[in-house]
Image 1 (spheres, rainbow, N blue to C red):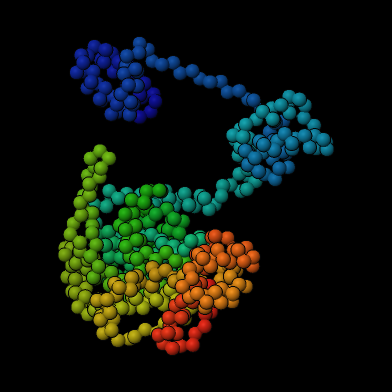
Image 2 (image 1 turned 90 degrees about the vertical axis):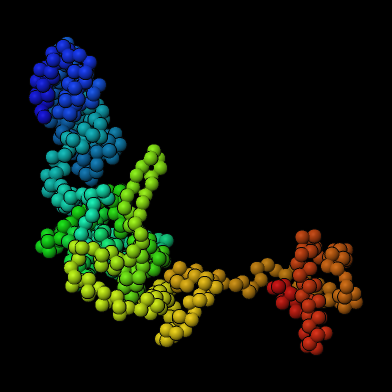
Length: 499
C-alpha cells in the first residue's frame, strides 16, 4: 500500500474510530494494523490526532559546485584512486603538497570546503566518475549476487517429508591445524528422507570438479537426484552448478547465511561419517586424494547398509528449553525399503546388494584404507596387512585392549628421551663415591652428600640429593645382579644417570 493510500485510509477511519466504543476501537485497530503494517501504538496516535501530520519538504541546497568536484577528482587521481575514507585522511597532507608545488591553487573558501567534506560525501560525488573509470561495477560481485537472487532459500522447517532424492550438500576441509596452501576436500551429500550419504574426495576447492563429482555420483545412486540444497559457498553458488542443475532438471536451493541448522542433515553426517572416518589431520596431494577416495568407496556400503542413525521427528520449545523427539534408529537401506515412494525394482536391487555384503569384510577394508591414508599423509611406508579375514575377526574380541583402532585418530607415540638433558654433577667425583660405597655398602646417600660437601671437591647443593639417591640405587641393583646371576657388571655412571 502506498503512502497516499494510507493517508486516505486513516482520514476515513479516524472519524469512525472516534465514535466507536471500546470493543469497536479494538476491531478497528486490528483491521488497520493488518492492512497497513503499522505498530498498534503508532496507529492509535494517528487515529487520535486531530489532523494529519505535517510533512515538511526539505529544500535541497547545492553545497559543492563544479570547482569542488573538479578539485576532488584531481586529488582522487593524485592519491591513486583510493576510497573515500582513506582520501579523507590524506586530504590535508595531499592538498598542502599540491599547493606547495603549484599543482593546485584553491582559494580559502574552496580549501575549507574540501577539508570539511565527509568520507560519505566524497564517495557519493565520485561514484559516477569511479564507475566510468572502471567500466561499471565489479563483474564477479554482480554475478554472485545474481546467482544468489536466482537460487531460492530453503530453511530446516521447509523440508517437511520429502521423497528420496533431495540432498543437502556441504564441503569438509582436511587442512589440519593450518588453512594455507592447497589441501584435500570432501564433498558430502546426504538424502533428507533416508539419510543415504555419499562422500567424494576432491583434490582442490573448484566448481568444475563439483559438477563432475555430482554427475558421476548420479550413476551409482539407487534413486534419482531431484534436488540439491547447499550453503552460500562460492563453489556452489556459481553459473557452472546453476546451469548444470537447470539442464538436468535438478532443483537448486540454498540455506541462509550463518544458519548452519538449515543444513542439519548433512552437518550431522560431517561429524558422524567424515570426521569419524578421516579425522582432523591434514591431507594434500593427488596420492592422499586417491587414498581418501578408496576409503570412501569401501565405507559407503558399510555406512548406508549397516549403520543405523537417528532422525528428528519433532521439536518443541518450553521457554529456553528445547525438547527433541527422534524415531527409532534405522539404516538408510531400511528407510528406503520402507518408503512407499521407492519403486519395487529399486527395493529389489537394494535387497540383492544387501545380501551380498559382509559387514566384517567391509570394516576390515576400511581399517586398511585408514592405515594407508595415514601412512601417505605422514610420508611413511604403509605396513603390510594380512589378506585373511579370520585373524581380523579373532582380533575383534580383544581390539579394545589396544585402545584406538582407527589409524586416522591414533596419536603418534612420543619420542623417548635417551639423551641427558643436563650435565652430570657427579661425573668427576664418582670414582671417589664408589670407593666410599665399597668401604661401607650400607652408607646412605644423605650421609654421602654431607661428606662430599665437606670434602671440598666442589659445590654440591642439597637439591642434588635426589640425583645421588638414584645413582646409589642403580649401583646397589648391579651388586644384587652380580650376587644372584654371577654376571660381571660394573657400576656404569651413564646408566645410573639415565635411570
